[in-house]
Amino acid sequence: MPLHRERETGRPAHAEAFDQAVRRVRLDLETVTARDRSPDLASCLELYTAGCQVPSCLYVEPALSYARQCGATRSRVPPLAKARETWQYSIDKGYEPEWALLLQGMPVEAVLADAFEHLCRTFFMPVWEGCR
Image (cartoon, rainbow, N blue to C red; front, side, top):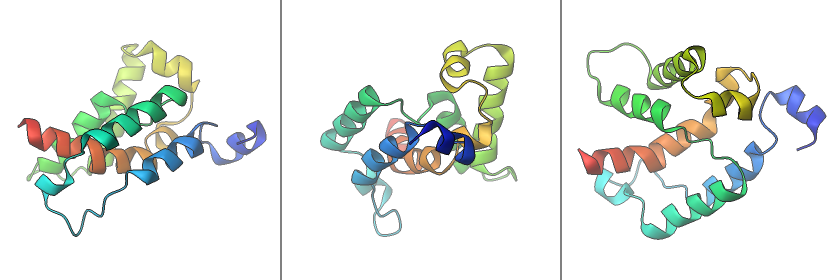
């Protein structure tokens, strides 16, 4: 994606390439059970390989907040909003200087968007459920 296009969309230039890699491991969440959704080794390796070529949209701490929020029955905060809150807190406190350097002040809404939520649902949440 050219730099002028990046400014128009607010998405990092590498996001489209990573989105294409993610689409290859997409699972139909409505038709499979949580156990069936568990990422197999091939899909994990494919995500790892894609992440070595372009930065991944999956940030672990916000993804963990997202997964926990999906399991929270009493909370009224949507999972994506909770993940964004975690992201912003980490940036504001300086806990993740590499995020600030990599994304150079991009708004949290552009960073934790559809690709992030898709990775949370198809990759991180099955792993999280399997570890609990």
